[in-house]
Image (cartoon, rainbow, N blue to C red; front, side, top):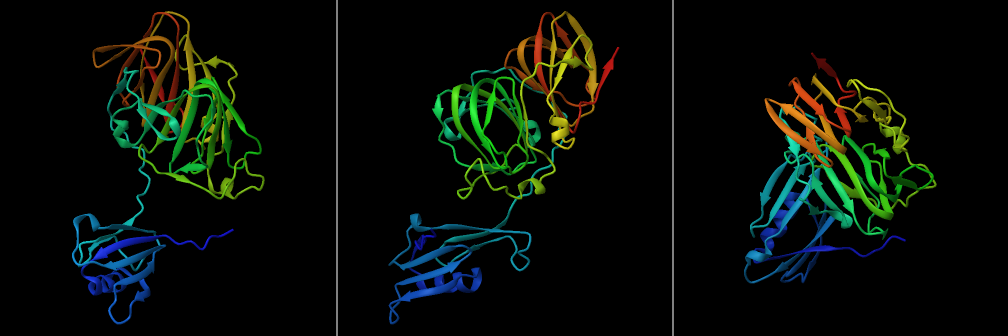
Length: 359
């Protein structure tokens, strides 16, 4: 049932007439009410989805200054992005929604061997940033923990992104996704491709959960939907709008040959589901091994799932163990040395990893 309750932004001003004129004539609000007629002290203005309640005060106070943001869209031909200041010092900002950043190749080496730097995120989740420089602000890779068991305080939401993939390090959780008939049970070794703007919800955990989440761009908006209950019985038009397909890859341990000698690899189907935007594979070796290679991708990201690996780049050695991560710049000669077993995630963008072995 639709409510008739309307919220108002209260602005106190000593420049009452000038403020009314400003919001009407310069900004574009409509005057709906004024009181009293002979000596106005209150005015109600309506526009851009909000109501402003102007109240006459003897003087303006600094804490009364209000900042109103009005988001423009691509069809707002008559209004350009700008900032207007009212006679009482209030700010009205017209702004355009930022376009999603394209993935760029900053040609930098990023490594994270810090397993203790956690910050509190939304819905009770803990976050560890795996790429602190965020690869030129175009990618965020996060290690996410949810240590409590039971119902999760999450809402139906979606992300304004180009790409997002999840890999379950450990645990078990119930998820809900738009246009998926049933709940998804996501557990150790599974992988999910979340197409851009697919609505989803974390329902409950059965075990403490740890997940790797890789998203582009790094900074993106999370939006909430209060009208859609998941899983939804009636299909939305979402599937027709996205080039990518939702994918829940269930851990199978099916291994094939790898581009790296003496390694095996497990394909997750991300390459096909993302319409060749990215690829995520799991590589494993159980023997002494040394190899040198170059790659030609915008992003080639690695996360150590188990074991250890020695990395040599620009004549510097890095000893990597479980939960360490790194991203390699393109066209840089890199050496991997494995002295025992190692298992890692490899994410490449665009598409499959373009790796060339060097003798």
